[in-house]
Amino acid sequence: MTIQKFRKKPVEIQAIQYTGDNGAEIGLFVGAADRNAQNQFLIHTLEGTMAADPGDWIIRGVQGEFYPCKPDIFDATYESVERGVKRGAWVRRGEEPALGSKLVAGNTGKVVYEVVEHPGASGSRRNRVRLRDTRNGRSVGWQVANYYRYVTEEKNA
Image 1 (cartoon, rainbow, N blue to C red):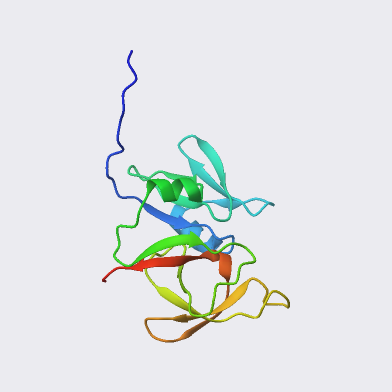
Image 2 (tube, rainbow, N blue to C red; image 1 turned 135 degrees about the horizontal axis):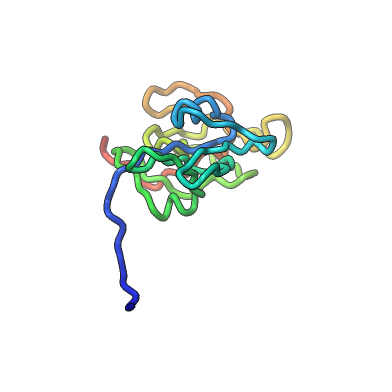
């Protein structure tokens, strides 16, 4: 048999990114799931139980099935169908985005935040940035920077 090439059909899926802190939201999305001692979310898939690490995406497939997906595979395979923001690279752990940098929450692709303060590499707020919601100007407080991505392009809403 000859090797053939195939292209994935354009289908829409629903997904949410597991941050390690949004277990209740993940539970509502998948219906029933557990966490283990390593803070992995255990997802019941068609192939059995699979573990999702913080940063992984939980996908609801075309037949309603759930499965975890590593972020690099997710980024290579999917793009947002919602108008809003083109996400760029993740903020790396320990990195302090420059004041005025625009960031977007990794699992939304919609709301743009602007970095208005960072405390430096020491102290209790290390790896955190103070953000302002660009839609309404409100502060969203201190956030862990590596849950966010840089904005590379804002699309017309």
